[in-house]
Image 1 (cartoon, rainbow, N blue to C red):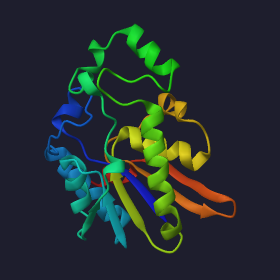
Image 2: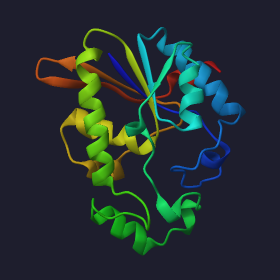
Image 3: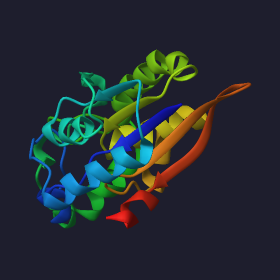
Length: 191
């Protein structure tokens, strides 16, 4: 089974900032969320993480060696990294939503992010048929992994929400990947 996990909360997430390649640690709640998600999913055969601290700290809660894969890093928001979401203009949001190739100045497009995440999913899918693999990543890669699973375009990103420390579960069906669960946060109620 393949478990795609969003990292626990950071103070930057909690304050409504776009958080791409900036590298803050988990806050106290995020650290607790990491422990809860790891306990809920149980032992993993393999844990893969984005290189950023918030994902590595979440991944370390599983208690096994963490493999870092740069393809799971958050979208590069370029000049928008660290900006309050509310300060991005309506015209900019409209342009971003209308074109998968649009990227923030100095940043990355949804299309480019989708290409790298799809390649990472392809690399992990066969092994997830015979072992349990957790990938700890960020909002945008979770959405791209969902699009890959469903066989749809990356414009899906604009129609989904991914909570901190949430889990998406992907199994192997007879025709390929099979979505088993998305944005599951039931485990957080325990803490």
